Length: 140
Image (cartoon, rainbow, N blue to C red; front, side, top):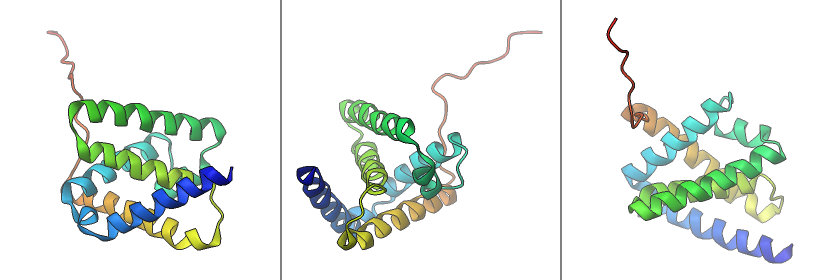
């Protein structure tokens, strides 16, 4: 267990540092994180990302992490680096809800505020998911 906590600590610290630097100011990354976070919490009937994290029971938590993994793998195969990073940010944030080390609280809070900012950025940009196939009604 301690080994997993150490790995999480390292990843959180590296991610928070990256989001403070140029990577965190990348408009495409911000929109992508915001789009995915919005889609997830709306589909779950939650108010926002933080609400989704708090309400996620064990099965939801596990399925979200599995979703992040499969979607990240697909995005990596297609060369979409922003989506891969977005899923990583969301996954670390979700995992952080179970971390209670006092020295990590500021980093977890920063990451959640960053995701909230990304949701706002995506909303302002009018970012939305467009279905791959649109069904058209047949002739009447």
